[in-house]
Image (cartoon, rainbow, N blue to C red; front, side, top):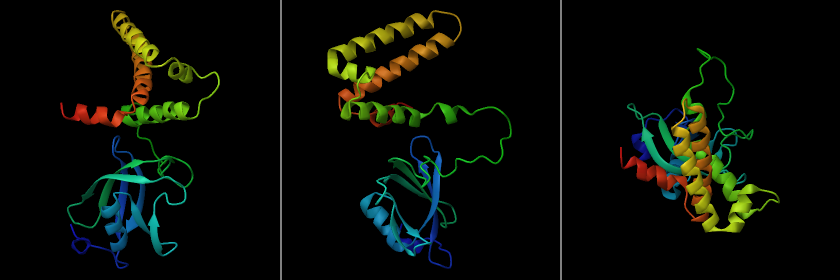
Length: 209
């Protein structure tokens, strides 16, 4: 879609909602002019128009918190865009992952599953494990696994898989929740060791829906 096919405001801008491409969490709202729109399409990295500075804004140019564009959607009126992104670091200038971290109203006291258990949690754990490999920390269990190598990591994956099976035989969900969490952690270590990541797992799973 060409930019001139979009309905802009009087300043020639179109609002853009940036969402995490895995969890669909809304991270920020900004604006694009024609230049920012074209740059985003060309580079597959989010560019916006800064209204306060009155200039093109490459998100992450100074902070390193680049937004890698996975898809761009336009609404039915062609006057608002949604971009699905993989966020490096934090989207918000405060250091929060999302700009929408302050709650005004909660309808009930139930925590939605998507707020706690979603693909972004696995991605965050992955980033911690990757950082341990690249920047070893004395006394770190994760570094102990990397130091011992692939055979030790595979042994732990096997052990944790057996623990899941044993836990599933017991009454109630508590034990299996704990054991599956252990297994996912060790699988994350294995992914880092094999130089791949959860994104490829999610893509493969998506094919099986």
